[in-house]
Amino acid sequence: MKKIITSSIFFLSLLFLAVSCGGGDNKDQYPDDDQTDTASDSDEITDSDPTDTGDTGVVPDNDQPARDCNYSSADNRLKPKNEELLFSGIIFGEKSLTKYIYVMNRCYSCSAADPLVISKISIVDKDGNADEGTFTIDSNPLENGPVSLKNDEEIEIGISVKASTWEEQVRYLRIKSNDKCRSDFDIPLTAQTKPTGKIEVKTMDDDPDDDVLVFTDVIDELVTQVMVYNKGTANLKLSSVAISEGQSKNSNEMGFFIKEGPEPGVAIAPGEELALNIGCRNDKEYPSPLTGELLIANTDPTEYGQNADKRIILKCGPNVENYPTAKLKCEPEKVSVFQWATLDGSKSTDSDGESKENLKYLWSFATTPGGISLDIVDDSNRAGSPLNGDSSNKIARAAFQAKVKGTYTVRLIVINDKGISSVPATCSIEAVSDDDLAVKMLWNNKNSDMDLHLIRPEGEFGDKDSDCYYWNCSPQYSGERPDWGVEGETKDDPFLDIDNTDGIGPETVTINKPENGIYRVTVHAYDTSKGPTTAVVKAYAHGVEEKSASLLMTTTDTCWDVFTIEVSDGGDDGKKKIKITEISPAEVYECARPTH
Image: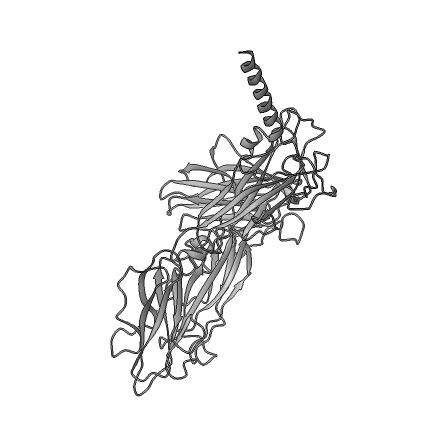
């Protein structure tokens, strides 16, 4: 019996020693750690350690003992909250939203004088070589140098990825620190592209541009093919195939037609193709240069849906280059969110290269950020009816308001009085979150006329010098514009995008770089005689919505003070510090209508 007890004690001693030397509970902490790091007599590896091989974190063996990976109560320990970061369901050609990894120091009684120091963050491949692939570190807490973490302190690291392949992408976020066991801590990053269809079109002609189909000289009628391929990994459905411009409606009318078009909703399997038979009819005796457009509406969501309406320019007949010319200029090419861009098509000409009095202007968006719907309007009447798709309009200068950040591509086709269309002209506008301060108002009764006012520090409601409202801030009115802050400097001046008198907004006031002080946001019920309305006001700091408030307003010439906005120095990254406070309780009071 004594021998059995002695043997048991000896076995337990060996087991305890094995746990102490072999990693014990560290294996639970790091289940994927199948490499044993080696080092010199020092437990800590620094960049100056002569045995450190650099970013790989692997040190030559040299018959040196393995590190002790048992964390004592006084040891720093790098601990991520995320075992991995998975990006799934990303659309091909698009960038994911930013996801965050949280990393903390999980020591228990470590000294504040000896913290966990994170010295480098990078993205590597499976072999430990620097390779970001299409992953991006969007938020790096080490931008200004190494970060020290005491017990339970944590940092966040923002990661995003672009789906540039249908294959799964795998990389690792490598965090280099003075953690004595794993100086290089790798967190798997995995990106999976959502299976979708992806359209590709090829025209069977001599023109190398597959967005243009050119028929040779056509006498009477000619049919050729357009091939539609599915380059994706799921079925591609064609919602409709139509001649959107220059259609021939019968055998006696010049123009373009589809011969035996596919059934609506036809599906093309991945790697398969579908032939479309597209024809042109021209006059036998007096053929004319004809232009048109083939529109293939489909379910391709890739690259922000920019090919969901695939358009092919059609050209047919003698002197086919003799057609109207659309010329388009975007002014400016970069705007702040909530500001307006002007679209100038006034330089467009008819086929003679000079005249323009008989032209019609067809405005549309080729792409918008995230595929959002947006109106294009007359630049001289921004509260007017949308021009998108209106083939009867004669408006050569249009405008739109950028609602979100991103790139907007505008498309213009001009048509002459003979019905001949131009090749589309395009221009792009980039909207950036550049304005430090923005205030937006909407309301729910289109018969009410509501006005948004932004009043400068120590300013007065209705004062043309210190209050930004419809009379002095909107492009619809020609009054003297307010000059706030530094005289002659425009970045600190307010701008009202529109005075919306026959709709429900939005009206938006922006200041790119406001001067310091306390501003006031006020809503004025200019006319509620045709019914009450609920006003909704949103305030933005550096492009991010910070506050939203709403109130029912029933009486003409009443006001509601919504927010105070305090602007000061000392914000992050050298930006202005903006504090938005909702005025409570919300009250409506009588106010005099501005005299201007």
